View 1 (cartoon, rainbow, N blue to C red):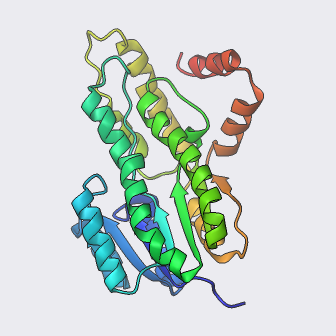
View 2 (view 1 turned 30 degrees about the vertical axis):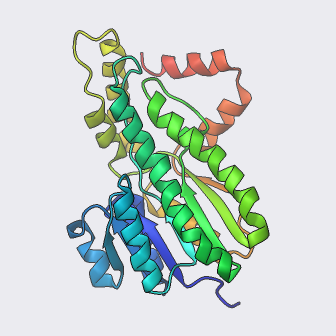
Length: 271
């Protein structure tokens, strides 16, 4: 069967799942554009044949420059919106500027690069947008309000985009990873240093301990890479793919249980 797509852009490609996506797709013979803030962290991708691009997803000038560079090189058939991070902390204590930055990276930057690459996909009458969400786009956890808000927003944004692009021959797929060994937990802990005199310090301490305890149950990035590669290869991809530790059971329990029961289940895990 002939391959539908030949070129891919992966954002957030300097580490974790993004780097794993890029390496696998290079191995499979795709032309891969790899974008992230640090060129140095993508030296291995460049050596493997990727076209690496320095881009801060929160800066519009960087996004415009990156997309122009990609278009000059022939454009891409597949956009993998992977760049993102998790910011945890009490809603009351989180400076609103930090909350806005969480949305800039996890939603608005993603939306902007999608806007700029869609016209070429429409002109070709085909394309694929893969948005890396999270099981956190369907569930919630204490002190994760701003992070979960971005992922819940991404889920709804992607659903609407899918309807808009269907007549254009462009598919939109949502990936919902569970616990993946990408250093995400360590990054979260760095983000939510709560002062000892905060009203939420005990909760923050309990959550930090739960992140440490959860490190042993994480799945490798390759679990999600397999889903991404399948979505690219299959003629009719699903609208959503979930994978990795706790993803399916967590989302099933959220669907099954009343809100108060799910609340209680979450809080009991922190005792």
